Length: 516
Image 1: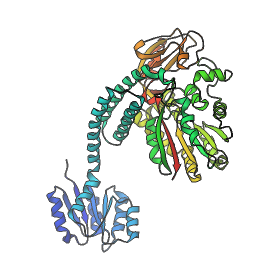
Image 2 (image 1 turned 30 degrees about the vertical axis):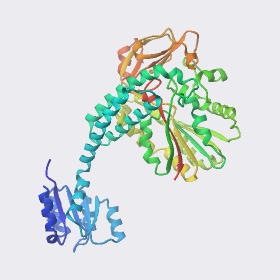
Image 3 (image 1 turned 45 degrees about the horizontal axis):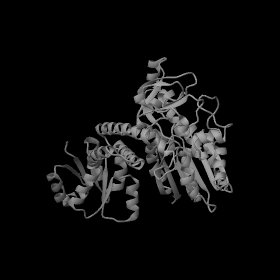
């Protein structure tokens, strides 16, 4: 490691000789100046890693020197002063100094400041890497004996935690190891879902909260007439994206509950979101609303009646007296208009708003080269969604909700996964087009690559005809037809898709918040 060069600027520099000798014995290289003018000349002619700057000096003051340093240089500056006056501290901090010390300082204070400002990145990198290496072993052992969906959620949350933490540091090697571990986890998760999914659909002690029970279990019990509630569903929001949004949202809200639910299969909007709002399985929706439900092969929009479904669910549960409105935001302009009309929303007991941007972003990666570049991997995908969120009408809506003192729920309908491994499927012309699941007659497929539902009604899915079946892709596979196989393999590789079985698609965030 190269030796650190320090410039110490103080009009009483001779009194600091013991401090300078102490640092030199620690291996640091020290240069000194007793006024701001000399310091500026030295900075123009030499590269320094950090500057210790006295606030009170004859000639140009420390604050003036600081301002002149930052005009042309990007060097960490530690301000040292005898004064404890608040305005001086505010001036210094407002100038984005790296640290602030009050005289008299001892050598160990100086050493600590150096460590904090120069070695933090290295120390954090080492600590994060070491902690993940330790947890890697624990997660690997846990994967050998997962016995419940709750345990799967815990594993997934740990993997996401470390993925987000490793994103912050220079640890590409560790990220590769984590990606391998996540792939292995998804492989085991697929086997678990394949073995247990059918039993989840039956009422019992081990039944998790699924799409069609979410509102009944998590939202409706927390409604009241004393203040409005806002239920925000961000289409296709993965758990890792929620964790990226969370620190921003916590500026205005306190998290009362952070949990997860499991999206039903297929993890596609037509099925999962309609089930959330209706409180019914897709099969029951098709029976109760035969004139509204459309199967995969049928023409027309598949999510046009969510408001009607939600009204029906509230009536069935005896909540019909609650005033509810439903909005779907598919364009930024509509989101902005909704913010402008916010006061009108306060007249309702429940405001349901669906935001479609994240879903649109994930699908855009398939069709737009620019988005492929900007969201080349999960790290950049998270960064892109964060950038959108920070500049979105959704964030403005959240601020309004916080100011109004209203209750807030944030969730999604399903997640998505970056697919990279093709698997061949053969079907007739009425076979569904989704890349992560297929429904249709006489499907031919690689048995090892999919979960099969030969009798969809056993899984509470409507079948288009008596011989229809469903298949769901595992891990990061995508289903392609033999026709123009090579073209479509290349076209869809490394795109975000949903509908199948993975932790990213099925384990969904649910958060209940109250304003600070």
